Length: 155
Image (tube, rainbow, N blue to C red; front, side):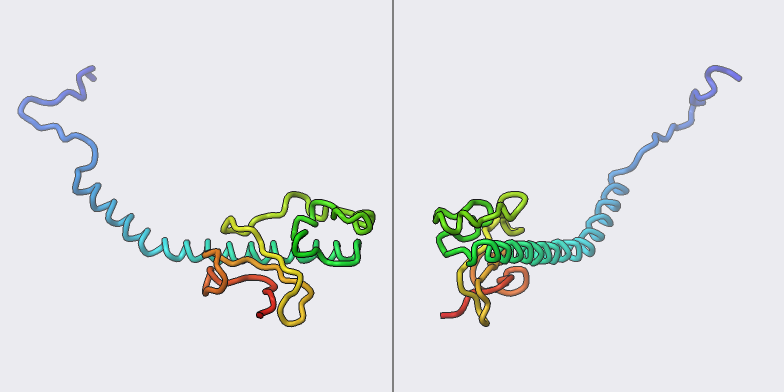
């Protein structure tokens, strides 16, 4: 066998290995079509997971608020809000009974990076309101923009 075994014979053409521009465009078009079909389904799952996360965080915060009430004998005031879960009240009487912090970390923000809302009176006889405004950060809405949690009493 010669060391020139791969050499091109005179008069023949050598085909270079690789993809043509047309082949690359066809592959890109197929990838685009697949992404167009699958993408919206994946994004709807992301929206649903944010709603589920907000609902879970609200349950955790609600439980922490119930623990505060058991310890100091009342829910936080409007001024204290959810900060009472991590900082003792300034009033000495309830501060002596406060056994916090009631959360392992700071008060979380909702999945849309907005603070959770708290009010001392909730709707339907609930002792407090604890909710997220949803994706749009505004009261009301539908889908992932709807309000989640224990809503405040309507005035």
